[in-house]
Image (cartoon, rainbow, N blue to C red):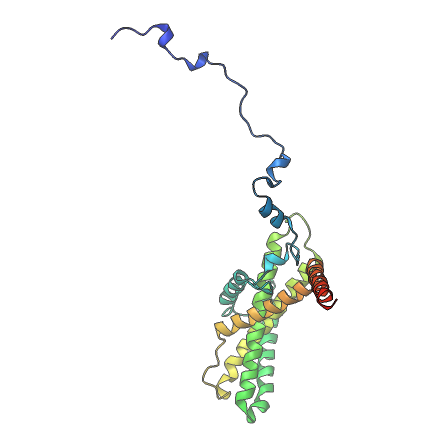
Length: 255
């Protein structure tokens, strides 16, 4: 094989190199405006505003079902139930390092539990099953409310800026969370002291019943926020347009 001449050797360094390819710091308008020429009908359909518009925060906590009706978010139910499972057997305590104050609060808590239990005894003399069911329902709803508020408090506290003071509404929610936690544990302890007098086969705090109450609470909130926040102007206009077209048809048939 003969030697290669200089003309046969390819050296990249000899090639002319253009400017470095880099991404621009600006977002060009063409990057986010849809290409209507490629799909004119689809682009026109997607450009239409929704008949009912809701703020972004609504879909963080709730959602719409397949019929467009407000409903709860299943992932939030799961998160709340995780809080319930972690708290349902936890003892009552208060966030303080003062041992004397803690001892007094625990003593007062036990006195309140016994007072509620004693107050139920006269009601158990007649139809104890109904009284037992009512108290079980109260206990279940209280635990559902407590777990929900605790979940929401942790969610909002985590999202807040650590460099800023806590907003007043979050401090109020913190107080409500502790009060509901006290009430939920009080109901649990009362139940343990008098459940044998209810005449019921099952007096435990049932996880599935708590979840049902959590879902009912979120469903009520989803509907309330939907009615308060939904912008129905598009739907109203569409309904009026349909009625106008129907009226035109009727006039034509009658003329």
